[in-house]
Length: 388
Image (tube, rainbow, N blue to C red; front, side, top):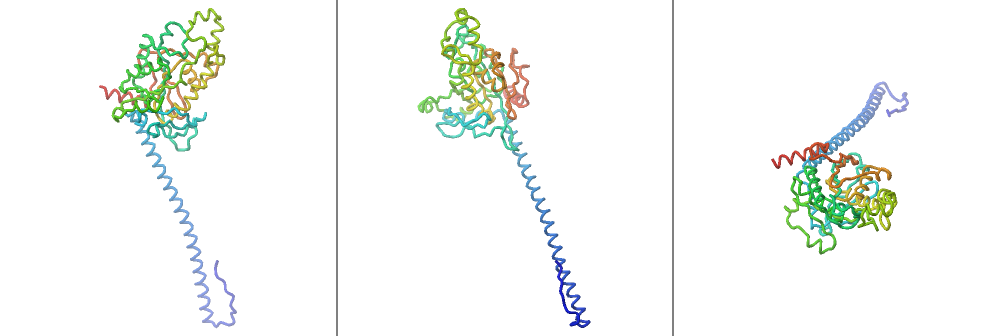
């Protein structure tokens, strides 16, 4: 705002009038200059702020890219597969986490050391902008033929070992996944699934030893501790859970399948075996089996996959069908027609919050069976280089 003065002109002579005019002009110029400087300062402040925030954004972008590159380098370092925390005190809790159907899952913790095995992981489907996805692999194997499979008996939750053919199937399954990374193994509480997992891992090229985790009691955890860090690094934890058991066939368990069909009729037996929500007498339906198996998968297995761990599940026809129903989003009608052969592994890639099936290997060898991802190809190449 320029200065204005009201002065009686008849009080000034010519000389003083001239001086007064120069004074007023100078004063107005001074205020005009201040006004201009204020405007320039405001403009430069805005420009400086823009440059500042652009610089911050650039730094954040560089930091994000560096973190991403570091993450990718870490993911590609596939030789070091087993976290020490997994074997810490040889005990993993089976406490259920607060996990919802949105895959926002929590942790499994080591009971003895109370150290976190898996940090809390935000589901990729609900992650913030800028978060990176962790890729992982999931291997599903139905146990090899059991002695009761061989005799055509209903087995269910009866704990029956593998037959000779089942042992061969488990070993062959191991050959087919010998170049796929495995960080942790989940099995049912039944011996045929555990035998399949153990025998399969004897064929793995990495040569790590599967070790059963014992959480039955504090003494079991204490007595099964491993105290060598080098040994821990060369081990793979195996976690057994009854929730992955075969569905319980009730009063059919131990009966011959053909004799049961002759007694009750083929249609009735087929309904017990292949319907989704009709259980056999005093047994479980597939729906009931799915409730426990899928809940366990969400609570205990999916957090491992979300954290980047590579998981193998060795279980049974119906518990695996239930999990596949969840992974592939099958309907109840689609899942009842799903057939799983004994000793045949199935591979899934967990990527960007989705499970992508890579096929079921049915060939005589690993070659040509899997459409390898770049990550798996790099892992296989590292194994090739290690064992040349």
